Image (spheres, rainbow, N blue to C red):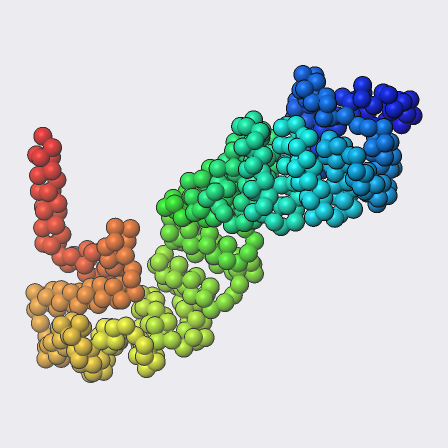
Length: 517
């Protein structure tokens, strides 16, 4: 038994061909066998009605001669003999008596043969020629254009594929634009780098696809990224994180978007989730999380995490990472833990600023002799932003070591710079006064301590400004020696200055309350 698109033709005589014309209407099945499913559901929906077939009965018929050739070719294609089927169909197309409908069917079948033999361009040519015969129904033409559009895209001819798809949409109406077609159009526009035009179709495909696959999310995210649409990216990525909560790539994109949109604390929380769940394995990622900890929670916790990962070998032991760790311990005011790292960094870099940071830590730990050496090394190596302040601090250390003359020499160097002259000259006067005084009464002793504390606090305020140590409110905070606690607070203020600030603040609050009433 030989069947032609589902109809048994082996028993038909020549007289049956005209009567059985409708049995040879191939459009419904033709487009479905070319490329995948080719919207088989729509093919069934668009199968010509009996009324349409009746209207076209004169034109849509096979003669016995052409029908036999086409039947032979179809049998060959059913057996996978596509090259032979092409040769057979060439015989039909060469017949002078072939009518438009027969030519249309023959071209469609030959196009399928070329497609199966991976001769895509010839398949496109045949299918366009089939449309040009004028014998195809509108729904058949739309389906055929969809196939042609797909072939253009697979060949990298994106502009042609887009134009064919758009033509099919215009001819077939809104119902033709299914999520599947919208996705193909979006992919074609993306390949052609026509993102603004393709965005509409990407969004139609994304909204209309019920059971989305990874590629659906990736395509939509790609469009939003190319168009720098951060809210759109956030919506897609949040859904991806919800669906695939264990995938690092999704979380990484999510945290980056949070940071880009100013939601830094949320980015920190997302990074914590990744860290706790073991998603972060690269050195740079762990450094970032430690810095987040240091900035948003406790500097000590960030530094402790950094040091733990560094010792475990998960953070690379580079000069930069060591500097980061040292700065975290400095921020946490854990001078003792910062000193070994600062010393190592300074020895590696030989940079004056690194020796200055080491000197600061040593000074805060009251390791004065080593602090003096580090201050001197910093000055000798140069490159300091405020060299006069460093000289003044060196003089302070020497004074605390009881070496007044060498302290004066350092203070005089500091007095050469306008920004440090006042403090340096104050110390010079103080030290020279010390030298002149052999004995003093209790009141003078208190004044001496007061003056010494003033200079000490000024020095500490200077070094805090120099290295950028501020609290969460942006105010400089210093450690006040026990002997100076009666004279200065942590903000470097005398009791009188602190009280004045308090009164001014209270007055401002009362004024605001009065205005509110």
